[in-house]
Length: 306
Ligand code: ATP
Ligand code: MG
Image (tube, rainbow, N blue to C red; front, top):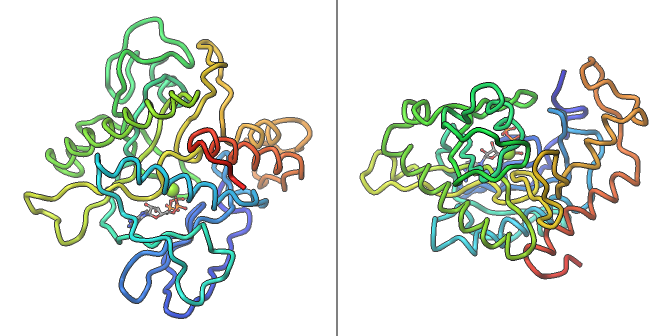
């Protein structure tokens, strides 16, 4: 079982058409045909959108994304048009709303990995490969890879796992030229971000990007992928404190660790493999998780959150 414990109702704002309620973001279209992306405080874990929100999470992740988009703008174009509130929007949307170019999204999650863990590690243990890329012997959980690799995945519906696929499968789905562009852009952005994070004491172990193409450029020789969605946040990336990095075990991380630990502890009373949705989070887990998101923001950007 999986999905939303309680699916939220979209907010009604004059001039905005509700398009989609994602796991974390709500999408609207404005009268100019642009996308209005509102990051909620929802949090997902173990394929469930939990019944408890993490206050300010959507604002922290939106501001962190914006910070990265700016830093990366010379490498790759992005979808952000402005962070102005649409007229008539609730005050609480301030800081969590981005007006974006509406793109034709590439149906592939563009993942870069510089370290081995998660689904990459699972595949490596079976076949010594990740997404079909051969890796050396002797790597373990948290090992640094000889060089960063592009490990695309197909996007799954809410409640289902993304599936890692070989590069050839991406080329088959989107075409050879776009696939090459996506791999190049993914690795270029990862490499830049990894250097920046490392200088601030954070290992960017891996990250997921979503790209789209402007409708008008589709099929054109000059078409280039535009970086969309959110970028380089704890929701889309694995950030590890560099001073605690120790291959051979699971690494501490700047994300949902407290949430996952609590949900799988006896205290939650929840059976991860069962039919029941997860229970509400206790206040302490909420606060510690909020503090982790704020800490990631502060370490990376070098500015205080509040
Ligand atoms: P799903 O939409 O399948 O529920 P999700 O749970 O990841 O996926 P969110 O991340 O909460 O959803 O919502 C963001 C959605 O907006 C994603 O489907 C993403 O692909 C899409 N998206 C992001 N940027 C753009 C853009 N510029 N143009 C069109 N769609 C976009
Ligand atoms: Mg998403």
